[in-house]
Image 1 (cartoon, rainbow, N blue to C red):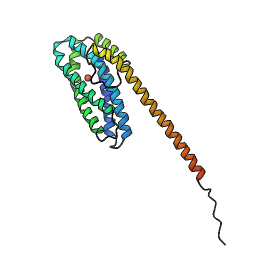
Image 2 (image 1 turned 45 degrees about the horizontal axis):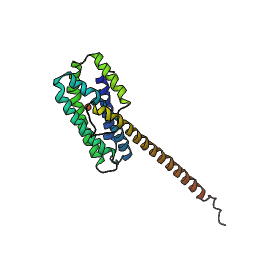
Image 3 (image 1 turned 120 degrees about the vertical axis):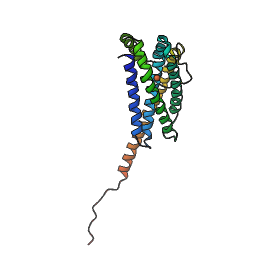
Length: 214
Ligand SMILES: [Fe+2]
């Protein structure tokens, strides 16, 4: 898959998550939390591979892309700051949905600019073979990209390549700890429910048919 198709696919995936969020009920806290976590992961990986491959390539190829890339980097920085706040919040916080809504507005604006201006420029500047090679490199880099936002980390080479590798290790540890905690809670709650159901069965009085009074 060429680089632009791969990035557009990411844009579609995050848009699908935004639509799910918009269709969910106001108090669907668990759904909001899960969607928020998926948005954080998808956008953290997506931003990392763009910053590692796409933006440096665009800047290298033409002077005309400099301003577009600098603006895109600032938009990424703002998005990562919001993602980092969301990461620490519960979906039951009264600011959670408002924050996610503002993030969606920012990302939709960013996607519109990338797809409308930067990507067409890159199609002109790069051959199909170059775009395929860039796409393959980005696809592979997804496996080692950070899964959480790091707004204060470097966003340009070579700093982002070094800090991204360390961030990936730390993020994987946090992801595993969160998943382990969740499955432990699920097991504990299903055991509790099972024990409660058994207790209520034992305590239930046996129903005897009432005899007729003479
Ligand atoms: Fe981007």
